[in-house]
Length: 304
Length: 304
Image (cartoon, rainbow over all chains, first blue to last red):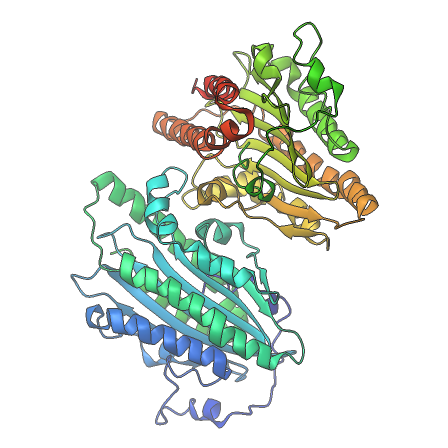
């Protein structure tokens, strides 16, 4: 959710007050006796985007599942929508168990009708706790048309890399993380993408894959292939480095180091909510729904 | 000199052992009785690149000149070349006076014959001392052909921007520094450029203008205009922010803050020399000349 405020599609997003609901699922979800789409269901996603997310979550689940506690997110945050039925969203958060290095894993999807079509944003945000200084995982995909996708895939550093070149070596140079970024950027349909928030740019690592994939009008099959082959491979590589090199790699930190790390983590969490969610969710979902969702996220973001 | 190792032109740079000297100046410079080209002379630079540097140095000189001490760089570093006469360079460093916030200003040019033509690198690197936490200035232009130029223009942060969002606001958000980067990147001949060194990427700010200007074969007039109008304006804007907002803006720092700042500055200096100069100057100028030049830079880089 690092990019909600800053992705191009939102700059022209003014949901009309009355938009025809074309999906019975949306109406059904207003009825508490009817089952609501789970956060892993992705009912509105185009197939290649959905498959990408399903694969991603499966590989994270396979590695982390046993170390995660059951979700405690209430049903009205697990699934939510605005009054007009033009925006739907789902959010789940699972905390790590006592002896896990995982603080929490947040996964979400947002679906909004915009004048130009559908906007779909999917996010996986996995935060580690202070039993390690290893990077957090951020994966976010923002699809504003059937043939374009903005994507952010990164391991977020937890230390100032200028002051800690050994950290840069350990998690970024020796893992060859930059190759995924380079491979994608070599494709003619892919161009670098910068968040308009300087803070969010600062949070990302120097190997962050932050790109715009655009196959243009009529480029559906090119787009499908690009997501299924290239983006999928890059995503697998990045998640692979994170699950193998970062998760449950405990490290005894000195007290001052631990305090600095927690302060930095807290700032990343607070600024993310401030820049992104608190500023934009009310516009998309109304203040009541937005407050509920933000409060749940803030609960998970509490430093433990 | 942050980019010496990482610019594309160097990756295929293997100076032939005997290259015809086409400039009498090169031969003359071997004779100690003949005057050598000053660092501000830029004898080998194409006109638009030279004018850019001359303008840049004039505006820095106008603001800082009175607060700088005379140069103490020896003649054999003020100008140097390799044995074969295929690479020439000039370097000057001036320290700030006692009550100045300037630590030192380094300016240099390098000129090398490469199989594809001439390679010219010009650099201005202005470091502030611990009387302020304001950013350093880096301007570097790497010209590998008559119609292309890689450029790095930035105010280098002296704090971890993730931990210090107020610093990001003070020097980067409120100064609108990102506009220069945006304006240049909108031109079709301009594309983002990333250093291959992850450390150097980490040192740069989120508003760094790091781009490749390429007007292609036969694009001489397009290139001239682009440098004279657009690059020149961006360079002026960035130097303007630095001279007005950063130079001689003393700030009382707490001791722990000061220690952290100096440690960070020292790392930037040491890593720059290690990654860039110490690794590459010997190849271009031979070990004796390279050692002399690197030693002079290290002297200036000593934390004061």
